[in-house]
Length: 168
Image (cartoon, rainbow, N blue to C red; front, side, top):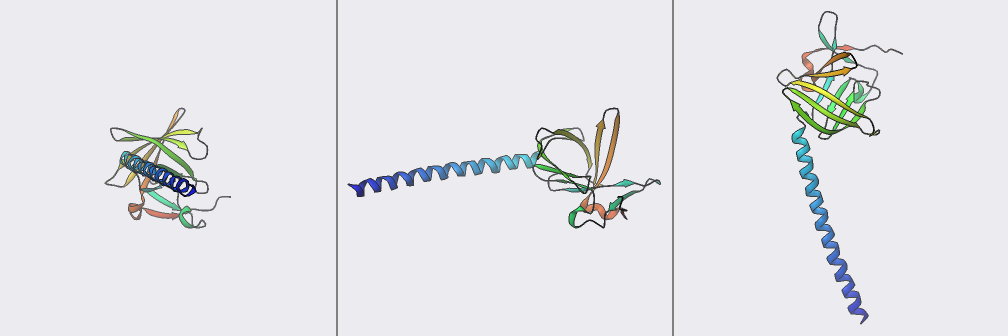
């Protein structure tokens, strides 16, 4: 009798385990589908842009911080499928979860939530000239509008690079 009891338990465990695996596969497929949808809604996914400085003569230059290592040597924005990393402050880049992306004419609007402080939400507005590789970031604060100009990392050789000085 104990043999039949153990066999029944093993059979029950085996069936339950297969059902759980089927559910897990369904969840994986749902996640893959969600990721594909997110990627399609984020036209800048996989791109990296460097912030440019405007010289007094109007020339755009790329500042390089040679005293910093690895990928912290230039101010940048990195887009992934679901995240935006704003490295304007090269020492402390901020990571944002992309909640959604909308487009109004040529304006891309990113609705963001800070990764480690979810109560902090922000909206970033961009215009992207794909042909020139230029990304304009529009920033509105109170009564002042600012436009930052960034260049696609793949086209960064088209601007002059300038070594930034250490400012203590």
